Length: 275
Image (cartoon, rainbow, N blue to C red):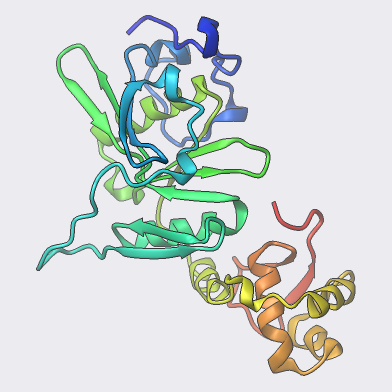
């Protein structure tokens, strides 16, 4: 594959250098090859906003709003399967996002508060490696607040074999040519995973009360213990759902990695609020 992916109008896409700033991946090909060389002949298949299936060059469709796309393939569920499939309600998109394992669900949960929209199985990438035709359907596509697209694959590290690593590396290179980030996500570590699942219970906008949230931001402008700060605002049982919602939205911040979230956890106002 030796033809460069071109942007709109037939000119090279401005992000085709493949810098680390636009792609994140833990797997790299054995040899350093210019990113655009991976992208020639790469096609994308997806379901458009009008419900019609589309297929064509990624150079043509790279700027589609894939964060609102319907799944490009069905989620399989059958008796005796070992993985758990289901739907996660994403606060960012205010819609259901499918997952095919609890690892994928946790990944969606971790993405949700940091993005403005999220879709599962957004498209399939199709290419030829010279000997055979191949395709890959990423697990998620997310849109950041600055407009950057993020392609996410979810696979525990122990399950990334040589073939999977090759596919992820190519996906990362293709993403770089069109200015998307690529993230390969595995199992979330404890206790972060447990803390994230707890805060996710408060992700719905109904947990946000503007008057209480304003006071919480004032109180936690200086670091406070979680329960002590909540008590300064009002009735603890009424304040905590709003406090947890602000932690979910990254407007307040706390150490969710070192130990379980609790009344003695130090909470402070985030430097920039929601990412």
